[in-house]
Length: 357
Image 1 (cartoon, one colour):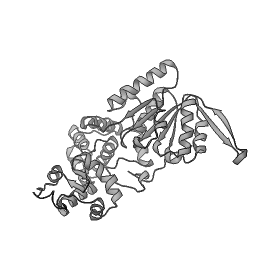
Image 2 (cartoon, one colour; image 1 turned 90 degrees about the vertical axis):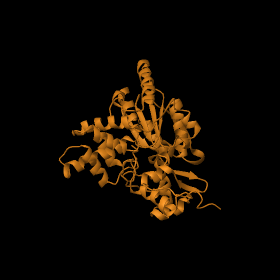
Image 3 (cartoon, one colour; image 1 turned 60 degrees about the vertical axis):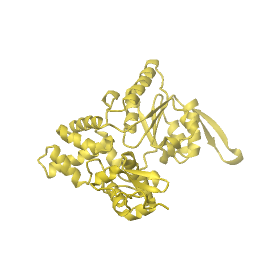
């Protein structure tokens, strides 16, 4: 069975590099194993994503009432928000087994045909990073999802022949962080599409309280609030920070997960009050102190902080832009007033004219 193809903690394999950041939203197999004990098993246990949860509940309940497989489900959104968890919940709600694979693991149509031909009736097939499926596999999946049939090609050249193979009804669940990369024919074959948004601070506090209970530790409400504020709206990051706070409390504290422990632990791991880490702050500091607030080109900014341009653009920038700390302009990156305020600096009056031509 094809499986996940991960390359490291908090990694971005589709981009060709690995990030070891504690605030990275990606996860490797080891972290997924740690997360397994914290995953909710039913929709009513799932915190946040109220709209998607309610819509998905209707789809599943209607399918159970009809005694048939529900429509195929596509889940999109940034990493770490619960797409894999929802796929597992779908299988649990249907009382079906879950088959897990990923786009990078399926490089040939034959790989997908082998998975599809072994499915049982009502089974849920979860394809993570579905936007990375090879084109021949995509075309095979079209037919399987629509007609529950695949054509297995036997032989080569002029003597090759296609043998139709019927498949039992199944439910495909696709997960993607880049819905725009999905070809329209594949996207249209999903009867239900749900987009997962970043979590609010209150929702993350509920996630942390639940996770702490499962870990067998008492989390003070003010500590939960502190961790949630530094978790970048992402449950995976929140749970990771919770485990690091637990470690600090056990090794250097008195075992209590209170506000003091939370702040001390997150200081050790260089996560500041709004969730910025060393790389984020390095980008902001260079932009404000070296380049007078910009605008400055991406490559120049990356060289200044000692990182690859792709790392800065893909790893650091998305959160900094989302938080309104930097802006992307045709002339380069610029620091916003919020960036200067966060660093405790006063923006110069002529910061917008440094690179004027």
